[in-house]
Amino acid sequence: MIEAIETILADVPTIRPHKLSVATMQSQTLVLVRIRCADGIEGWGEATTIGGLSYGEESPESIKVNIDTHIAPLLVGQEASRVAACMARVRKTIQGNRFAKCAIETALMDAQARRLGIPLSELLGGRVRDALPVAWTLASGDTAKDIAEAEAMLEARRHNIFKLKIGANSVAQDVAHVLAIKKALGDKVSVRVDVNMAWSELDAVRGIAALEAGGVDLIEQPVRAEMVEAMSRLAQRFAVPVMADEALKGPQDALAMGQAAAADVFAVKICQSGGLVPARLVGEVAGLMGISLYGGTMLEGAVGTIASAHLFSTFPNLDFGTELFGPLLLTREILREPLAYKDFMLQVPAGPGLGIDIDMHKLAEVRRH
Ligand code: MUC
Ligand code: MG
Image (cartoon, rainbow, N blue to C red):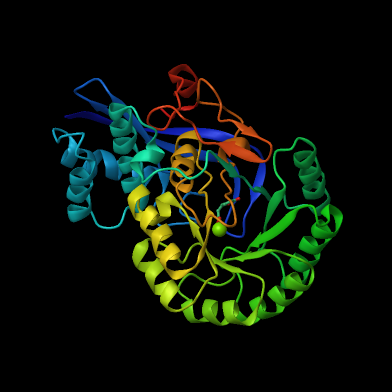
């Protein structure tokens, strides 16, 4: 039986300003959910967004208040081991709030997988790999600094896939920035861009043509999420793969995007999809339609990152790897043992549930009071 649901806000400074077209982040707010069950088992989940309300329509504070006020009372007293029934109850009553639902579903599934003594990946259908390639996002806002950062990552064998955040400057400036980085790093690395919806279709036609000619490997969400037809025209027009991110808010969008041939690749995000199970469905729709997958991040801390890793480890068509670097952008650790990043990969834990241990003392130092 579910005894208590606690939501914790934690503010953690980033290692450097992280500049996206929608926000410049100096810190990240983690929303952690802890579910305690009558059998002594507890589960953890996380719902993290980017830049308050700059990226999505849920903020860390709204996620906390909506869980505390509306979602937790629906669940306390329910049978914890019946995760699907618990989530059906939540989804029937609560509109929207996909991020909040994701944190709850993750915590329930973590607890259930611990109860069964199996890794979360096995509750999600079973892993097909034990480690995931991890891209790093270069977003310092300065071309020379980005190049130095990428070279340090290569040297440390931590990342050889780099995603560049563009769209805040003119198309010409952005293209010059990306191509300077691609030229400096050469063919041994994959360079990709995320426009975070900043371009018009005409900007995109000009920008993508130049980026494709310069050897960029992947173009993420060039135009606004609702511009499905424009995405479809861009995907048909260019050989370089076009990836949907903000356009995918769950399985229904995945189906619509697939039917419109509006993306070559889907970026799957567990919170944006509304939880681990809907995110798995996004992956399954892609698989059925011959669309490639990429494991996306909302720059979650360790809990959301490793929950995502368990799911992504089950995707056979994870052709573009992942960007599960969130904890590496943060200055503070909340786990007893940090996540294992090595040889350009993140290891998916083998222990029960999420396979991580929260250090309550470390968490106490960053939690909001
Ligand atoms: C996004 O739009 O994909 C992922 C990596 C990063 O730096 O920002 C996020 C959000
Ligand atoms: Mg994106």
